[in-house]
Image (tube, one colour):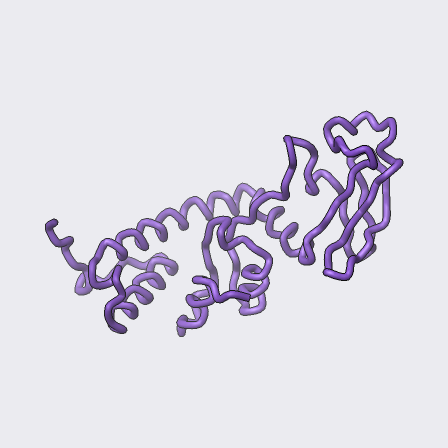
Length: 196
């Protein structure tokens, strides 16, 4: 996997109290989520919803049990999940779609609805379910904008933004950790913005 900014953050973090990472959907991919969980870090990261072509029913409208290798559609039809050689799971509803009242909202395929699930479907599904919780939403909206503002503030500083020295990079990292922990930047390290 290509090294991501989140991986860099974990690699340089020497503070055991930093146990939560915030991020938008750019970080909400299975490999990053798995990396964070394996490091014991809570991933408060948005995960993109599954595709729903043309506003039709998405995977989230289906009941999917990877362990039991079964999938059920909103109309109640149940089929087996097949594991492909590339790690994807596939569920083919085929003739179950014939005459179904929900077909126009589900598929326009002549052979019926087919689900293709990500290799790490269970992990993505778990995080999608979490982010629908109102408490999670409130926490995310409270903290992430503050972190984004701090990053923008740091990047406006010429020496830190350009990262011309190891000291500048270290200041950037430490300031990011303080914001993540909800701490204010020490007064001694605050610098007035230079006039243009």
